[in-house]
Length: 406
Image (tube, rainbow, N blue to C red; front, top):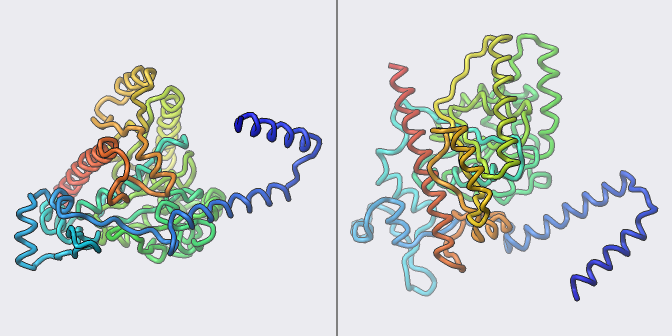
């Protein structure tokens, strides 16, 4: 009955508005209503302080992060040389803050961290199609790397600012142009440093995004026309040079298009990660992605003598619906096309990931899951495996670069 009522209301509204033209002012009003609704949703999700809170960790979770057993954790707590955490309000269990947990992790995983003389490895997360989990992948990689002890800089290069929103920051209400890559694009600075801000997540800093970044698609070619010596593709790469010794990993979330900003992200990256759901439309879009990028790269090589190589390229099967029979066929296409570039792990489409995204969060934001632990573990384990594999590529990258310098 409710469905029928809703349908009738919709048809009446369409009939009444059918003879009316939609003016620009109507679109402006619609934009304001949409922005207000997003703010209301975020206020409810992030109440009472409109700020996201990092997770806390139990003794068992801390032991898993460090790769040790609970007995060793208890022993070190007794020694008092590492953060001891605190008992929860009920006094029933000991909990560790994210900062405390990362201190433990950096101690026990010291051999996995950036070696002396190594520099930040830069990852660009790219795909020309929206809705493929590009932003979520950027976020969980950043969180996963920080939970492994690494210091991470995240750059939101997408004017939509979805990654910025995942950090609990509203792009067009709380982000100034100076907090984005815009100053680099305009040539007002040669370093990304002034745009960096801390976040709610210990170990992750952010260069935010907002709709002002749309102007980059006009500014960069304009600068190139005025100055033939200007290299529009190298702006972000040069801007990162000043901070590469201060981070272990730099992650860039790109726009879903072959834009000037996307080109900058790819040219600044040591490795590319391409999230790709196993469905026919996304597979076809990925073919266009590689075709356009290869044409662009070839033109840059021929016209500007640009030399560019990547240490690794990973294709990540994302949003995999186990109930979708057709996905098996597309998965075989992907494997045949990208071969060894396909990571041997799939990100399942689960209720956990869906509900988390609705709350501007990821599986790593959850301290304790209220639903099925089996479902949560399936999603969390998949992301953990992806982070493990990407960390191996990062460590190989450090080793290769240090060898080349010798």
